[in-house]
Length: 398
Image (cartoon, rainbow, N blue to C red):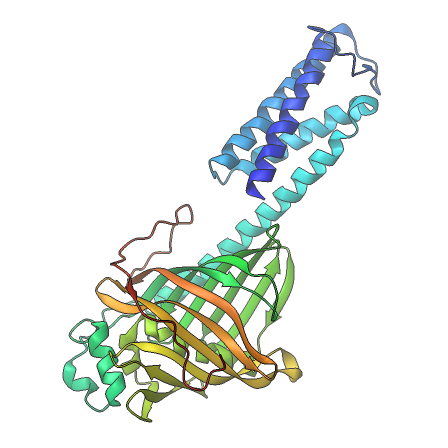
């Protein structure tokens, strides 16, 4: 869509040269009759001609700004549209179809403004979240993990967090593909996420496109034991705005599962571990007066290969507890800590296994107080990929 709007701005602007040529009388333009709704004097025609040239410059300038990802492109485009539409009204019989282009640009401008406002709102929430977790973490000593199940101990040692300062806040970037129903089309997605470890909280911001055209923005948040999922089409129309006890439970499970990206959180006082066998352990998180549990599965090398839990699927009164499965298939080290870097999330439905999100972690950074800059998708701090065969937790459907 970015490319299409840029081309539209440039082409629409370029077409205004015909109006300049017609009313400046530099060259004949037989395609235009030259009729106007108001009579123009000779001087008026010269001014009218220059106005067409101004519209051309402003619209093409907006296209160049958009191409350069400058945030002010939409303000310049709006000025260009206003000038252009005034000219079109005066020369309606010749230029009326230009209104279609102007209307299309206005739609793109409206979406851009809505996306900017949504981003500002989410950024403010993320800054508040990071401020809650600010501070210096204590060193995770080897003696502190002695009472944990053996596979959890092995995981923490292998990941590299033992002997290091505990993470207080975390920020990460990810990309992936998501879909809303079995057999549905995959939609490419880009996301960034922020965590506070103490108190436990997260904010996930995602951008994707439905059918490759309609922009979708979303924010999933967990703060003070409460979750909220907000998804907007074109950043204008709310598709999902959910917050209830079932969302709280799911958000807590999400935090519990995603601490694999900051393993020192596994020793937090709000997480209790229960041994199952040599490769599995049950984690229970208690926060905000609620609790949620998930079973983690580890391989022989001490890496988390997945987890499963009972999570509410759907919304409102119809939401029902359904087996929720996360699997991990690749691993990377970020800032010296090994974490799962690729995998998928899905549901075990009566009709079979439904994978709804395939994810890849591009970057993980610990104890950074700043938000990501939004003009760059550079991957920083990643060490070589450590590949593993795709795996799904015990009991998951193939």
